[in-house]
Amino acid sequence: MSRDERELDWRRFQRHEFVAPSADLAAYVSRYWMASWSYDHPYRQLIRPSLSVHLSFRDGLAEVHGVTSRYVHRELVGQGHVLGVEFRPGCFRPFLDAAVRSITDRVVPAATIFPGIPAEPNVEAVEALLRDRLPEPDPNVGRVCEMLDVIASDPAIKRIDLLAQRFTTTPRHLQRLFAEYVGIGPNWTIRRYRLEETTDRMASGATIDWPALAAELGYADQSHLVRDFTRLYGESPTRYAARY
Image (tube, rainbow, N blue to C red; front, side):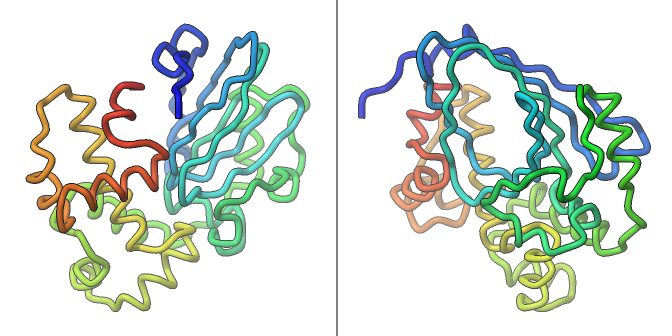
């Protein structure tokens, strides 16, 4: 499929800003983000899969976007602006008061979870909204975050059984815990973090020995790595690297 050349020069058409949360919300929120764009004809924005739940405000519409298990496309046209809240992976369950798996790959009206959506949202108003719904401490949140930190920081964690051994539990228990708090299974989560290492290495500009990297990340060979990356991110590693 031919490429929309605007993909390779997307910074000409889009602006992004990020703001850190206040200290009392940092246990739940990774950051606030603002995106604006200007396109004279429709542009298909590739959105890569995310372990974070997002709360977004755009054109008077407030929505909660669940964890996404694979890439999606969103159409951008004309001039637009969106304000978003990126929740820390594993930390949205107390706000939802239900299993995070129930909104995976779904977009739901924010008012069903956060009554009192501000008419003119900005970071200050959104923080007030979150404080009104600030949940009671949940010890499972801290435990899940610890597991996610281990997955992210230790390349040796390549399978669910290795994670279960690290935390002296069972794969079955991990599957239940991740469905409830993360919104997607531990094996997918592990694969997502390992593939993130691929994007990090591409971003560094270093020459990549693909067969060696595939073996290091637990893949049978380079073709399996490329196939998994393409299925998750919507394009091959080399095509992805050209974009970013």
